[in-house]
Image (tube, rainbow, N blue to C red):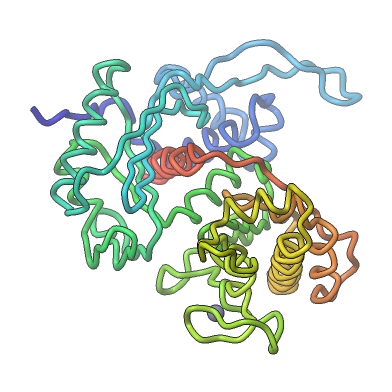
Length: 384
Ligand SMILES: [Zn+2]
């Protein structure tokens, strides 16, 4: 049985209604007066909009707040976060991570399982089963968002996975397939883009107009927010920073560049910089252990990786002048072991005053990627 969605759970809204809802989702409870001022709405318009948002269970009225020295209380509008539920998914080459979130992107359920088969049909079947299981537990769902490593292009129902190396997919019209399989409004994006969207609305970058997110780990990722919009690029591939040269005399990466960021900073590059032991095996876990034990070669590998990371942060900051740079991913150990080298790399490249770099290191667990998927679904619902 194919699970069916509940299209009534998200009514058609005017642009102004969506703007009001988005403002409260991103900034939390706001007084009416402030909301009207921020969005340039007249009092009667705002009253009309909030009345229908309250009727549709999106908002709650409650409490008052005295604004500044005016002494006039203004009623607060709160988000009814528990009124809608979304599914977020992250696909890797061999695993599916899934969460249910509310309208404030708070995770209320989570599930993960190995991918039994990477074929598109098998993955769609597995996703349908997971969604169906969530629907049994939580009732109607409003939408689904899928994050994966790869290039995503197109809009609306034609949005397509151009390529995903980990899944071995090319030209998969995943939104259409997901909607046909689950009956739910669906959205997809690159996983770093999804994480950036999550930080921009719900995380350390909530409400910022200009933001850079850099992820380190198996790969290096970069997502950008400029003028309050997630940068999508002309070809769905913004933020490619992995192969920026940081030392022309450095080691070779797998693409044959000398001294690019990838040749120092990826988990495999850090492992590869360790001296060979008799067994010949060098893993990232070995590098972590050896650095924790104070072994100089491992500490040097992290120091070089940290310098490379700093160069990337400096370069991205030169290009976009972000209010904040959020650092995340499963390779954050590089910052723990080599914070001073990260800042050495920033100093080496950044052309502005160092005090302008607001670097925010966000603890990471794998569920964050799936939460990013849920945020895609929330944004999709709000852009309809
Ligand atoms: Zn390279």
